[in-house]
Length: 426
Image (cartoon, rainbow, N blue to C red):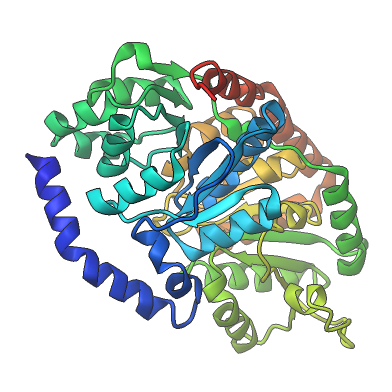
């Protein structure tokens, strides 16, 4: 009954959803140009398709090593990546280029999902993390499409919400062929809300299998030369509205001790790039924008800048490598934090605010391995960065401890790929 009410509500709301996409798309053309895909009108592929659903930026980044591994295992398949947001779609294109197919995810109405599945005819549906869309799952299951929930995580807060509708969750979860949970506690929560025990495994997080290519290392080294090898550099990555001012205030405190220090700041969403640039100027700091270099605008005449604004897509991993210390955003406000494993893979000390519930298990492992500091305020953050700049040996030990945690937990990717391949018929 709840599923029927959900579908009815979504059908009624669909015109408003499309209108909002059009309205938002005035600034981002992806919301307008691709609205047909939201209704399930996509171009079929001539090859067998594995459909990978990665709702937004974080899930798209997490899916990258999985997509590459699936293509290596079977080069005769096509991977179709869907995202709900223009930002997620843009990040996918930046990561994969022409290696894969792209579409916006269909709105979760029976008609839109049915059209999408009928056109794509996927051999499998791979859902990243915890995107449980009822019609996407139910209609794919009816078409005998094996469904995989990969890198699955479920917070205690979400589990309690799902328990209120347990009668609807059980058939939904039992339509999923395999749930590859990040940790034992995630697996237990999925079981509690109705998953079948035989369908749930603990594989670990594929985010630990981050690889830094020689090309990225070379690009990062070249950037560090531009930033200044004689200057201390820290990065604040995946920042949100409400955090940027705190981070810039922290940088001003750091500069009172280290006048030559530079901050690389990377907003999470591209629509905020210009606003953050304006904020930097309003606080009396000088910004240099990464995009002006990558777009061929030439070098800045003035090298006396305080903040390097990472206003490009798909370069975060490279930007991390140009810093000495990394702060991971979404954590000074109640967003739940973002993935700390990319800076850890560079051997950087990892800092974050107190709001890290989205990556609780990973942060607990980094904390146990002494590769992480929690900094609840701009003042605490500045003090921690200064401490690490003052003591490069401590910074090196903490960074190597973070890297050791990454290396100790690698291997989930192979387990996940093996699990998908053995359950799919091409």
